[in-house]
Structure formats: C-alpha cells, structure tokens
Length: 270
Length: 245
Image (cartoon, rainbow over the protein chains, first blue to last red):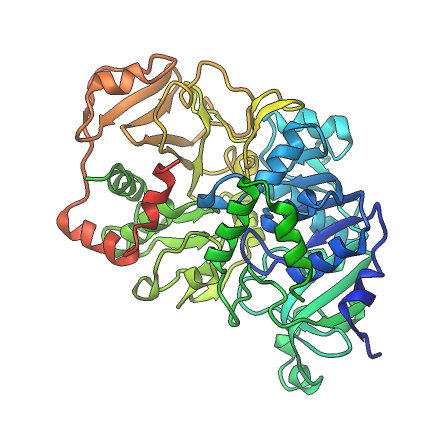
C-alpha cells in the first residue's frame, strides 16, 4: 500500500475539463462540497455530471458554468423547491439535461463496477424515458435470451472520476462509509479514478482491527484528501447534520441574483 | 384539520400489516404515514426509505426537511441501500411505493419531468426519481398531490414519467390529493372519498377530466390518538411545508 494522501488542489489536478464526474451522497447528504469548491476555483469546465438524486452539488457547479451535460433521476432541494440554477440552465438551453430513473442509473453504475457492458433492468418500459435514452444510446430494449420478454438494457456508466466523501480513511485510501452508503461503493468501483475526501484520517490499524469497516479498499483509490466538514452544508452522518439554514441562504441568494457572490464565498471556505 | 393530516391517515391506511413499503426523497407525508401504520394497525410492516435505515425507531424519530437526513435512520435495525430496495422490488417483494405527481392523468399515469416539451421545457421539474423504474413493478402505488387543480389532473401529460393503471396486472393505484381519494380502474379514476371540508363540486371543478363517480364517502380523518402520534413524530410541522408553494 502506498501513501496517497494529497491536498485538495492536487486532487483537483486529477480532473480534466470535459471529464464525466460522479459524486457521493444524495440530496443534502454527504456531497463532496469542498472538492466541488476547489473544482470551481480551478476554472476547469465542460463536465458531464451523473448521479442518482443530487442537489446543491449539481446546482452550484452549473451556476458556476462548469457543466455541459447533467444526468440525474431527480435534482432539487426537496421541500425547499426546485434547483434554481439547474432549472434556469435547462430552460435556457445552456446545458443538456438527461433525465435518468433511479433503478437505471444505479444499475448502470453497478455494470460499470462489475466490468460488464450493460445490465438488464426491470420496469421503465411504457414511459417516455425509453425513447429519450434509446436515442442517446444509453438504453436499448432487448429480449431476454431466456424467454422472459422485453427488458431494458442499461449501458454501463464508467465515470472518469468519482469523488466520494467518507467519514474515515487512512493515508493509503482505505475508506469507511458509516450509515447510509447510497451508490457510493458502486460509483467508487465504476470510475476510472477515485478521489476520497475524508472527515478524519485514521491509522491503517483502524481497518486491520475490524476489516468490516473497510467499505472501499485502497486498491480502488487514486488519492485521499483530509477535509474536515468537507460535505458542508450537506450532512456527514455521525459528524454533522445538513445545515438547512445555510442551504436556504444559498437558495435565497440565488433568487436574489447573488449566486456569484455565494460562489466567491464558497470557494474560500476550505 | 389540515389536509396533510387527512392525507397521512389515508396513506397509512393503504399499508397492511406485514407489507414492505418504500419512500423516497421529498416525502414527509409518506414517512409519517409509514410510521403511523407501524404504530397502529401494521406493527409488522417493513419500513424502507431513502435515508437507508431499515425500520427506524419511531421513538427516536423526528421529521426534518430532507427525507435523506441521516437522523431519519435513528434506531434502525440495519442499513438497506436503496439499490437493495430496488432489487427487492424487481423480485416482486416491495408491496408499495409512494410517488408524487406534478401532472396526473385519468389512468393515474404521472409526469414529474417537465411542463412543456422535454427539449424546451417551460418548467424543468425535479425529475421522476424512481417513478419510471418502480411504478410498473410494485403492487401498490400510492400517488399524492398537495395541489388538487386542473393543472395537476390533466387530460394529457406533457411527459409520461411513471405508469399508473395497467390492465390485467395485480396492481392497485391510489391517488391521494388534498381534497379527495381516487383509485385507478379500467374506465378511469374512480372517486373513493372526499375529505372533510370539501364538497364534490370542489373536487370536480378542479379537474381537467371527469373521474368515475357513483358512490363515494367522506374520507376518514385521523383520530385524536393518531393525531398525537403524527404531532409527536413531526413537532415542527415540517409536513405542512409542501402546501406553501
């Protein structure tokens, strides 16, 4: 095992303009916000971003003009309303938006993690999403070779980079997801490069003492960054809950046309 | 009584003891309905949710604005990845799912994707989440809307994100609005009950299509005991936020 501990700037160097990126978490939980702040600061752009149910991570990257295409089953701020910058950018034709459905995006990532070209996924047939994805070449209706009828084949999703914020990691890139994991283990294994950002750097013995803690072993990891509060204002389970007031402040500033001010503040936070 | 509390009671009554139910993001009322069922008539229902705690402890539960808030998994018996809940649904072992609907047609098909065309939307909605995947494969679909209006109950969807009634399938589709309860059948959306405080005219004048109406009843609101449970789980009235748009 090699030492893979770097700072945020060095981790951002692993990303290139035009890459396809995926991030940990859902909605207001365990989004790698510190990494996203540094990514915006780097000036890199034209990203395709893909996730199941993102929130502020997608919205702020789009607000900063870093995104060419976004793929998600749902993006928003739940009870706080629509994602203002996603909405504006899509309605004005500034970015391409591809609506996914949860079961397809999850299994596309699983196929990526398994090294398979696609996975068959139930449901979906009969909705308008099929035509959209068949046109884009992401899905295809096939016949079950064992006689089970029509089923949707979902093409493997292999992001260039996955950025996964975890509670604990060691310097070599062994990482521990505590509580909800969402699709993060699949994302980590599907991506060509894996960046772990962690609340705490723990000694490797933390994993040796109790190997069940190791949800993403070092052999998948490209780089590790120590970033306390790296998911803020989204939650990091066992460390801090979502800061709803801060999320509402972001949305208020967006409404008032002050998103650039928020971004200036955001990129200086870490 | 606030329509949210009536809707929660209706949603809870869709869950039978021992059934497996799942809720996703932006789902405060489904979460409260699942707990209400568990604490009253369905103690053995299996609670699966986007926060990934299996059977969270209702004694430790308090409702927060994000359904994925990690505190919603407090006291759970295990972590169940949403991906695993989707696998279970593919095996036919998720009995029910709750989904919202920005537009609902007379077959209880739903649109959560866009108003206007997909390529040039007038409004880009949050998206269907698991609707396209789960709506054809669960046995019970409970759709809800807090906006009973002609804009919600439409003749034609702008985009078909989820599938409601399917002929010949063992599938029940219930629609719960802030005014009434419907069930989808071959001839259309059948009116089951009207909530207390609303008239049949209120219900019909705010729909772009005619539902099937013959006998219908008044929706049973929660009892005092059930209201105490709802208030204890949601002391800050997060469940009412969805009505303020």
